[in-house]
Length: 348
Image (cartoon, rainbow, N blue to C red):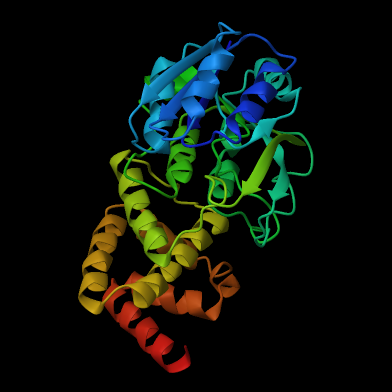
C-alpha cells in the first residue's frame, strides 16, 4: 500500500483537481492523507465533501504550522509500505502510482523518482530544468549512491539538468523514514526538501529513476510551487541546512565527488555574497560566525583539502570560487565577506 500525503494551505482553487487526479489513478491500493494547514479559505470544506465518497481519504485539520509540519503529520499517520508526497496545486498522471509502485516492487527499491511536466498558469520564470536527471531508466545500488547525493545538491551538468531535491515525484520506503526518525525540518522555510532527501539517501540501498513526466507541476503565482525567496531566506537556509546535517552525524566520503565539492563552494560563495547584499555588517558577521562554526564541525574542509591535493579538480573551479575556497581553507570567512562587500560597492 502507498500512503499519499498532501499538505493543504489555502488551495481552494486547485485541491479538487489534485485529489481527483489521485482518485483517477489506475493504482487503487493507497490511503490519501490530506493535511490542512490552517487554511482560511474553503479548502477544508471542499475536501470534506470529496472524502464522503471515498473511504481511503483521511483528513487531518491542523492550525497553521507550515508545509514541513504538515508533511511530518502525514508521515506519523502513514501506514503504507511507501510514502509519496504531492503538492496541493499539482496533479499526477493516471499511471503515476502504478508505475512508481511497480518499479519499487520489481527492484526492491527504497526510493523511486520520476520526471515532471511543467504547466505555466500565467506565471513566467526562467526554467533551467530542461533535461531529466538521467536520460533513461536508471537503477543505482548501494555502492554507487554518491551519484545520487550529488544530484540532490547540484550535478556536473546542473545548469542543464534537474536535481533530485524535490520530495514530490517520488515514492520513499516508509520503514526507512520511520526507523531512522527522518522528518522535514520545521525551522526551514526553504530547502527543507534538500535536507530531507539528503538524510534519507544515507540509509537506502537502491534507487530507481525513470525519465517519464508522470508528475505535473503547475507554476502558479503565489503558490507553493512558485515562491521567490530573498537573499536573506537563501542565506538563512544554508546555515540551518548545514546545522541540520551536522545533527544527523552525516559523514562525507574522503573521495567526495567534484559535484558535491563544487556545490559546497558555490553555495558558500553565494551565501557570503548574500550577506553582503542584505545584512548590515554586524549582523552579517554574527551569522557568518554561526556558519563557520557549523562548517568546521563537519568533514567538509578536510575533504575539500584532500581533493585539492589531487590537482585536477582545482583547475575546474572558477576564479571567484578559488578565491572563496582559499579564504575558507584558512577560516578567513570574515575577510572573504568584507572583500565581497567592497567588490559590491565598487562594481555593483
